[in-house]
Length: 59
Image 1 (cartoon, rainbow, N blue to C red):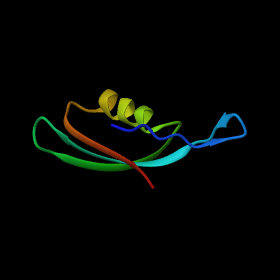
Image 2: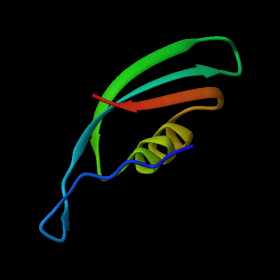
Image 3: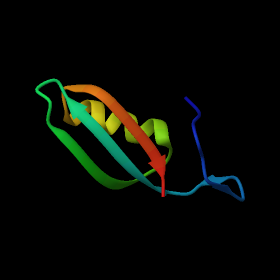
Image 4: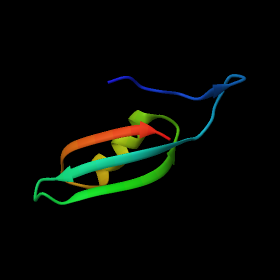
């Protein structure tokens, strides 16, 4: 998985990500958030849900 960063003048900007996931009981969720990286968005989803599949993209 490729990690995307938005960098400007040696500082990391916040990027908007869309997180799509499916939980173990089959429920599907889509939510948006501001994160430092796509890997941070993944960690947020893992901490919130009991995940089976996850997809994150910048928007």
